[in-house]
Length: 309
Image (cartoon, rainbow, N blue to C red; front, side, top):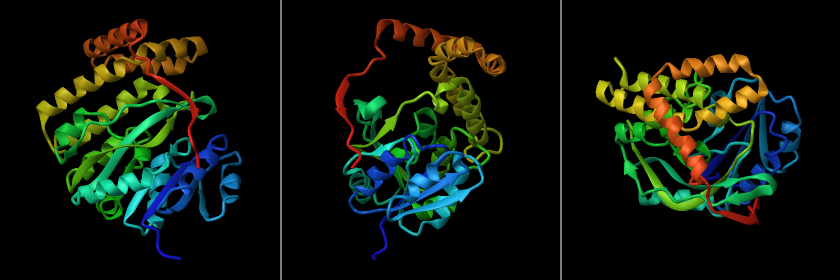
């Protein structure tokens, strides 16, 4: 068999509910990728279900977090391109082909990303929006904008190895950290196509925006603070304020969830996040509530299920 041009690494932890749809969406792609599932210490049937698919390689390891699982898959990849597909997401038909077109259009790219739809119960999707055309090596631009998720991105394998892969000390915002390191050696570019459907469910890290804020600011301090790769105090101040507002818009709803669930230990962490930059976070919180009340946060829904194969 000819060597696959693309390796899809699927980090999976207790993902039995979604892993089938994810794997089938990968196997249906042209060109046909190599598919590696890294079972990150699951306690359910994730590994068993993954092994039932012919041609899928399954690697099991003790739980070490998503960054460690992705790095384990990267170590096995020999293809020129790598996609890290989350175990609850699904590639859209033609997704790989579109991302490869992006590399052809941007020869200096180390990372190419496309757009995504949201996937909800029953695999129904909420239509997303296409990204603005982008081709950049500017770390300031990357720091001030939303980082594309790994599932919607294809990476140059050699570039990933050169920058050391994912930082395993980070349990969130590891994608922002990786993008900032990658743009020091090459271009990050977009492709005008929808390439994945990203599932929305209650177990996601996005349900804890106050925690994400704390980690995101650690990443910014690491790269733009004293001794960082791009040491820039003014940009660091601007970026910290920008992300305090961004996460702040989601924090009122996190606070309400924590109260309803009586998760008082998490509430202490929530309160500590407010102390980071209370004025900016408060502005974001007010904006988030106003957006919810006005209904402007809602997106046009599509009723058909997303194709998994």
